[in-house]
Image 1 (cartoon, one colour):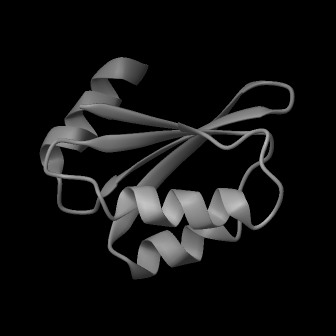
Image 2 (spheres, helix red, strand yellow):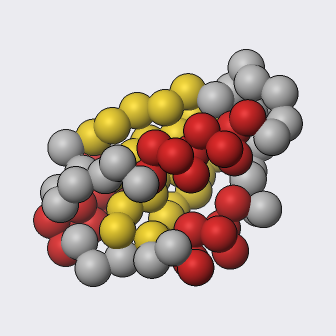
Length: 85
């Protein structure tokens, strides 16, 4: 199930902090869709360390969507794959 977090209007470091807190609440089958105004490169190593995977895409200029799921969660991964075709 998709969980959504819009951090596009927050000031640094709030997007990072809120995203890291939100991924800790993911259950099996859940993934987090983060809406951001830039690609959060500093987030990726922290996600990797925490056992998460992600995909990022720019949906329009200045708008990024980052889908994050637990590394071993095949249900969430399949949901993201199905959505993207």
